[in-house]
Amino acid sequence: MVLAPMAGVTNVAFRTLCRELEVARAGTVSGLYVCEMVTARALVERHPVTMHMTAFASDESPRSLQLYTVDPATTYAAAKMIADENMADHIDMNFGCPVPKVTKRGGGAALPYKRKLFGQIVRAAVTATEGTDIPVTVKFRIGIDDAHHTHLDAGRIAAEEGAAAVALHARTAAQRYSGTADWDQIAALKAHVTAVPVLGNGDIFDADDALAMMAATGCDGVVIGRGCLGRPWLFAELSAKFTGRPLPVPPTLGEVADIIRRHGELLTDHFGEDKAMRDIRKHIAWYLHGFPAGSDLRRALALVKTRAELSELLARLDPDVPFPPAATGPRGRQGSAASVSLPEGWLTDPDDCTVPAGADVMHSGG
Image (cartoon, rainbow, N blue to C red):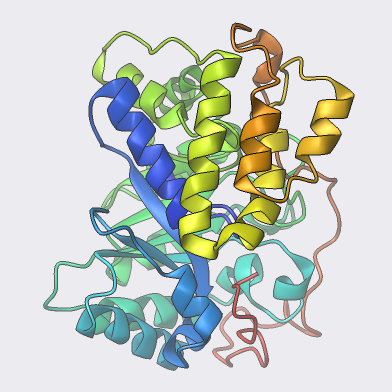
């Protein structure tokens, strides 16, 4: 089970919280918790924001880092830097970002359409880490849209070029985060790619969803994105389900409040109090999803400025409220499907190896 990299979410604070809750509620750490996606170019250039994003806890193991990249040469330099400087124990590569500012320059979910370039990028990372214990894995979507599926070729090419595993978010870029994930495409990829493990991603919001995906598709593991927003204890539940142990009792509202306080503390350690409290606001909305909290208290929490204020406001919640059935289901980005912005002529030649211009200028990776 893998925590999917999410920009502005899976920083060292959130990953630490997920690990702590897995230990507290399931007695083990068996999840792979991946760092926020960073741009290979910005990493090589040692952009200060990017370097801060790659922070790991002193006891975090394995340290997993995801790269957004479009250029084989930059990919090699970034992977070599990670290996030479012992920055991480695992490299994942993201070819699934559907954000228009990324795809319109040929990055993210647009890039696997260029089969040869995609293969060169994967090979560059694998070559840079040869002789080390650092595996390279690859995550992608079904394709650009329903007329341009790329996942079967992407999985085959990634495995041929030395990737240790592949993961499929079972939506097209056109879907973004809307609609329903097509788990049948995970099954198709699993049947098509037999040399390396295949992981599934999309519409896993509780432990039963994960088991249902694995049963329906035969995939070797699951990648959790939006399902853990405001639910960092989900990995403890998954761990228990996968090992046949009793499922931990869902937290009461009082226990959720304690988790929010701990999250705020960890964010403060990483960002400082001012930025931490601005960052915790979006998490609070996810944490309280489905719980009775009252509109006035929700508004106050949405404007919280200090940890002391956060603690005082959380103390107003009724600690005995049990976890409600309404607290399950989708959270975070959903939106609606839309046509995918692509560079002019992008679909003309899938064998074109030209590196897309300007697609790697964002230090956040999109």
